[in-house]
Length: 334
Image (cartoon, rainbow, N blue to C red; front, side):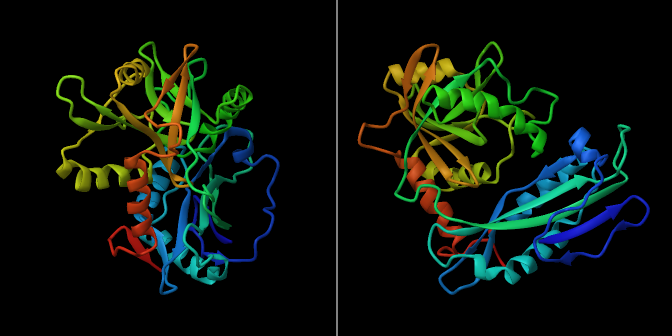
């Protein structure tokens, strides 16, 4: 593991790469009481030549610093942390399987360590990075999921911290997810407000491909970054690729608010082409159906299909850059 300590008097200390071990902390450490914690999720890949690649680490570092700043934790140089993670990853390269679909998951984390029961900016902190080999999210191919539209619990709200990657955003979502799973659904589709705006699905960003009712033009829609949506690295990658490769084919790529009723209307009128989530773990996660107000909204897939065309293309396009099949600035060679 990579560890770097900080305190308000002397700033950041010397980085260390040490064997994976338990942390020894005072029970009064502020992280335990007031949730001074943020983290990132990213992956390292091996290309065909055996080189190690990180995927868009600059985006993770930018978000990491925004998250830490929001909860009064210190910032760390984005380029320096990327270089440190690259060195750490090279040292642990034996844990990166040299096979498509496999990678080394990296978890940069920062916690407030000051021992105090008072509420205030932490006077000390710890930045650490741990790692774990991971396999394909769908080892036998895509498996489309079913969602439960959730309006009785709210993941994020205007003026809150839904756009930051804080551990405190995740724990409150577990009970609603468990309740959805008890009713046979894999994830929650988080709705917001009386309008029932579609926001995120589980811990992923959400995309919907719809034909415009008036023009028939195909649109790829996702919710805007209004402070309630996590600025996902995969989300940004999907949008960039869609503008680069789908817009020339006549698609319209849109970041705007859209409602559950809009999805339902499109499904009833045969205009809902497909729906999928996006995130680091799965890249894309196709959606078969959404349970909403006692009805099932079918999301464009035929019974024998597990993924729509756009989701399949996005997975292939993104993987090509992650594994170095396509040389691109998104791929950082360690």
